[in-house]
Length: 263
Image (cartoon, rainbow, N blue to C red; front, top):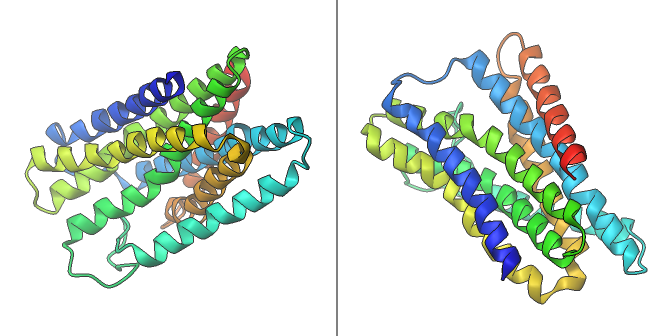
C-alpha cells in the first residue's frame, strides 16, 4: 500500500504543478511567446531524456542483473515495446499539437480544443508511468532510501517542467475562445492523467514484480518517443532554434543533478 501512496503523492505533486501553470490563464490572455515556448519544450525534452536514462534504463539493467539475468535484454526489449506502444497511440488517437493546425491520428470530428487536450494527454501518459514505476521500485527496495529519494527527484523534475506545460495548454485554449475557468480545468485535467497512470502502474507492478525491468524500460521508450517525435522538433521551429537546444541541455543537466544528488 505504501508505494501506492507514494505514487499518489508524487503524481499529485506534478498534477498540482500543472494546475498552477494552467492558472496563468486567469492573469494572461495571450499565449506564451514562441521563443519562451521553445525553451520550455526543450527543457521538458531534456528532463525526459535524463529521466529515461538515470531513473528508468539504468535501474532496469541493475534490477535484471540482481535477478541473475542479462540486463540489456529487458532494457532493450522494454524500450522497443514502449516506443511501439506510443507509436500505436500516435497513429490511433486523434490529436493536434499546440503549434500545428494539422490533425494527426484517426480522422474525427472532434473540436480543435478537444484535439489539443488529447495531444497533451498522449504526452503525459508515459510521464505518469515513469513516476509510478519509480515509486513502485522504491517500495520493493524498502531498505534502500536512495531509491525513494531518486523517485522524489524524478517527481520534482517532472513537476518543474509541468508548470510551464500547464500554461502552454490553458492559454492557447483561452485564445480558442474558451472561458478562462474552462481553459483552466482542461489545462489541469492534462496533469490528472499522470496521477491516474502513476497509481495504476504501481498496482500492476505489485502483481508482476519479475517484469519490473521490462516495465521501467517500457516507460523509458515511451518517453523517448515523445521527446524525439514531438518535443525536440517543436523546440526547434522557427528562427534561433539554438534557444530550444539550450533548453534541452538545461533540462537534462537539472534532472541529472537531481537524480544523482538525491538518488
